[in-house]
Length: 275
Image 1 (cartoon, rainbow, N blue to C red):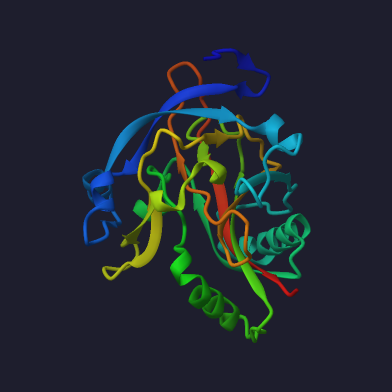
Image 2 (image 1 turned 120 degrees about the vertical axis):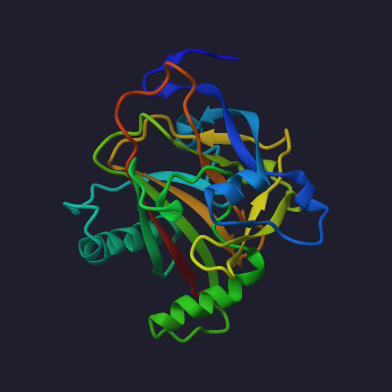
């Protein structure tokens, strides 16, 4: 295993990540996670190898359709990412334009955004600490209808939809708590199970998460800068494309990270493909 320090960070590292426990795959009920306590009860740590995929993406060896992720650039005009009004007014349009440009979608609509820093208010805005997907493929149609209905858009029969998560650092480059994600091409769909996220309501929302397999290939972009955006696929109604990009933050091994805290903003969007 390479321990060479590349120009932008380690090319390949080993770190611990939390997975939903495999026992849930055999149970007749889905885990419910919405607090640190319920997360610890339903998950366990595994050592995984995480590879920097900058060169692979640049060479075309990985992309959204086959791998579930890519990277692009965005020099944001937002002055204060903690100002929800400014983010909604300025950043949402930046991300909608980015998604349409990168994917070829005719339009895109923002579900929400979330800012994460070293000082979270609660479980919802803390760093994500287990491998998960943001949605569940079984709810794709309803979710698309709900979001587009919020914007007064009438869905046409021939439209297809894909959901994306954009993730961009602000204030600092990412020296701690970077985001790792699983390459779709290494993820059998049967490894992905249901779970309920209960961080915002007792009833919870149906989402999904993988159980551990040694075949999963973890990737990341080392030392992301504030003008770089990670784009991850979360759902797709188009055939023969990636569906999920499970992801989690992780701690760098000792002596790899730097002193600056990670601050990031993520947006969740639905892209509309009209033909």
